[in-house]
Length: 74
View 1 (spheres, rainbow, N blue to C red):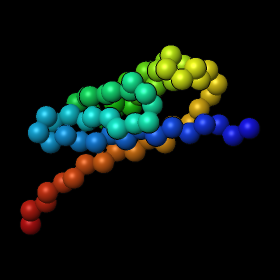
View 2: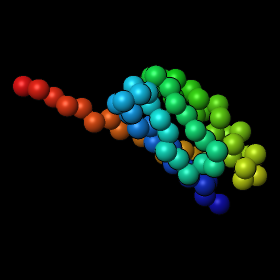
View 3: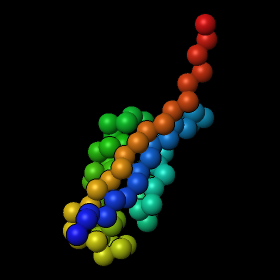
View 4: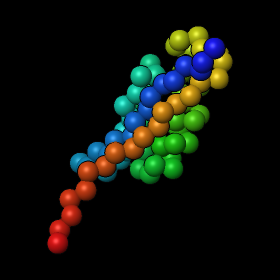
């Protein structure tokens, strides 16, 4: 049986200067100053929330991506 795959995206909020989450994992809300902190929070909280909110207690895969729009001059 194939592992369930969930999605987590880190999106840069220019106004707040933080990475914020967009995810199909119920209850997962992350806001951090760095991508390293974001990934650490995701690894810690995603399994807990999957178990608490969906009853998932088997290994899953997470498709993780980050997106940031940059304005370049020159």
